[in-house]
Image 1 (tube, one colour):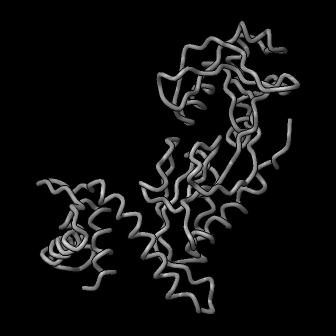
Image 2 (cartoon, rainbow, N blue to C red; image 1 turned 90 degrees about the vertical axis):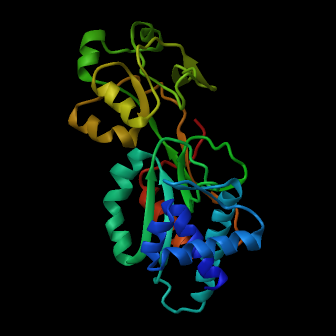
Length: 304
């Protein structure tokens, strides 16, 4: 077993958390898998895995090696395919993350066509509102909505999502339709925070010069997009969401737009990925496809 094969074994053990499952998946004896990991740890002079009776966990050094090993194997695949004439022949694993709403409503419905063009690709799609760690968790690229806070990543701007204020017809029938900001004192806002316990900024709007927040009461605070939309549909208050996510409910009359001239700042949308000398072709192809898929949905960046 050469060093690259040993790294493949290590990655499979790390992914599955089990020597037995990794051996079964690779078609190798369990003893061969265990010996390969022992040799790798001896060569590197560090422990890569914590072994328990139930599961195998990566050590801190193991987590660092996991990403470097992925990069090394990706580079080897790129090198092997460098002079292929059929550039559409993409293969290997692609791990991506994006907000759940975008995955559910836009990306996954179109994904069969992309995979039909590249049948040798395997996509691992994480759909969560949580800010994943791109490097530590081994993501090839992440579609991120909102302001970026990690300058160590490469960001490819795609555009901005327009925000709308919406509420359910039942809520508006009970509370009335707000016509100006002062009317919001008689209304409820469903508060959205990234982590429960954080303080919600309130109702966000542009005053002609800058974006501000109008403090509002509200009985409910949520920390994910599905709960946020569900709260508005249940009549619990006003929410401020990307128009794309509310479009179907607006079309069907399950939500109604309010205060269209007082909307929050458009949300930037970026593809982010780790710094690398050469980005694998499969990652480039997926990002190009995803950018094209979103092009018609995103408004170009412009001042308010």
